[in-house]
Length: 192
Image (cartoon, rainbow, N blue to C red; front, side, top):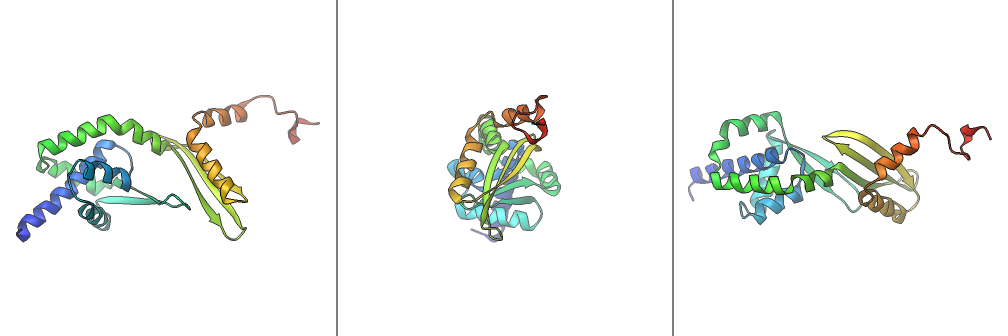
């Protein structure tokens, strides 16, 4: 393969990544990007990882890290430069590739959005010999609720993490408790 062909292929791969992230309209994890691009046979794993890294380095993508004991997720979003680059060069991506990505985006956007809307991660707090569980509920990239809970054991942290992600009514329940006009009878503010 000539150097010029390799350069063209690198550019096309970067455009494909930008196109996918742009069509999903929300931050995508490395795993989600990998699933569609490798599963769709659009590029190999090594090429994808190399391109993601290069794109962050040159400012086409922004990466954010969600760290936890058993959950290490990097999410990617297009920067303004990335969006402008895609707008200018989008037609260099083959029609069949764009159609495959559009199909994937239409079929999976809501599922991926739900994964992103409810997050829970935990971290060791070595100063206090505890675990901090950071929970959040987001809608359209806006935080509806963010909550940090400190617990004594890793097992408690894992349990909170699991329940937070699998309990669909948690936000409604918290909101209901906080907006109820009558204080609970055993509340310190209830005057008893």
